[in-house]
Image (cartoon, rainbow, N blue to C red; front, side, top):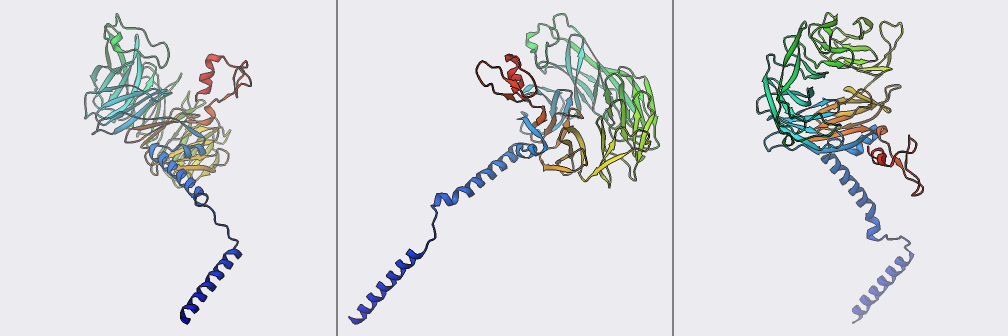
Length: 463
C-alpha cells in the first residue's frame, strides 16, 4: 500500500512538471496546411515546367529568355510505321514529309494542315518542296532523287510525275518560274513547269491562304515539270543554290568555284575561283556575297562583278555558313568560336574582326536582342548579344531534329521533331499588342500606330 502511494506521488509530480514546461515553451506550431503550401506550389510549378518541356519541342518558358515566343505547335498526322524525314521552307510556304513519301503542307500563320499528298513511292528520298507558277494556277513540286512530283496547289491532289535525267545532290530553290538544284557531277539544273487541259480551270487564288479544292474544278489540268536548262561547274555542287532577287542564282562547288547564273537560264554572269573546295552555303546582304571556303578564307565578293572586296584568313578550313546582316557578318570558325566581322571594313582588305564568342553552332537569324545560334551537335539554342558577343541565354531542345529560319533578320524559326511535332517561333518584337480603350467610344490603338480601323483590330492584336 505504501509502495502504491509513492508511485501515485511520482506520477503527479511528472504531470505537474510537464504542464509547467508546456506553459514556458513559446514555440508556435504552424497549421499543417500553412507549412506545406510553399513546397506544394513549387512542386506544381516544376510539374508544369516538366510538362511543357515534354509537350513542346522548345519550351515556352526557355525561349522567352531569348526574346522569342511560340506562335503555334502542331503534330503532323502520320501513320504508325512512319516518321518525319525533313521539312522545307519556301518563303512563307511550309512543307514537311515523312519516310514513306507523304508530303504535308501547313498554313504558316496557324500551323493548320492544308493537305497531305503522296509521292506514290516509299523508296524515293525527298530533297525539297517548292511552289511554282504555271499559267493559271501554282503547283507544289516535290524534288526526289528519282522524279519531280507535282501536287495541286489547293488540294494536294497528285497531278503528275516526271522522271529526272539528273540525280539531285541538293535541295531545290525557287528562281522566278523555275526550281534550281545541283547534282553530284557539277551540273546546275533548271526545272520548268508547264500545263495543258486548262480550259475550265479557275484562276489563281486571290490572296495567300485562299485555297480551292480540285472537286470545284470541272476540268483537271495536266502538268509536266522537267529539265529545261543546265550548266556545268567544276566539281560537285553540294549545297543548295541561293536565289537572289534581281541578280540571279548563286552556286558553290567542291571544285572551288563561286558562280552567279542568270535567274531563268544557264548563262553564267561571273565566276570566282579558289584553290580549295567550297562546301558551305553563301550568304548575301546589301550587294555583297559572303562565302567561307576550305582555303581558310572568308571571302566578301561584289554581287555584280564577283570581285573580292575583302578576304579574312584563319588557320583552319572553313566549312560553316556565314550569316550576313547590314553591319555584321558572323561565322563559326574552328578553334576560335563564333566570330563577328565588320560588314563594311573600309580599306581593310583583310577584314576587321569585331568580337569572338564561345557560342557553339551557326547563327540562323538576328533579332533586336541579338543573334539566334543553333548547334546541331548539342541540340541547343543560344542568344548572343551583337555588341560584344556575350552569351545572354541558352537552352537545350533535344527533340528538335530540324531547325531553320525564313530570313537572316527577324526570321520565323521552325523546329521539327522526329515524332512529327512542328513548332513556330517568332521574335517578340514582331508582336503588336493592342492598348485597351479608356471608353467604349474610343477606338483601340496599337503601341506603335495611331488609331486603327476597327476591322483591323483583330489583326493588330494577333501575333
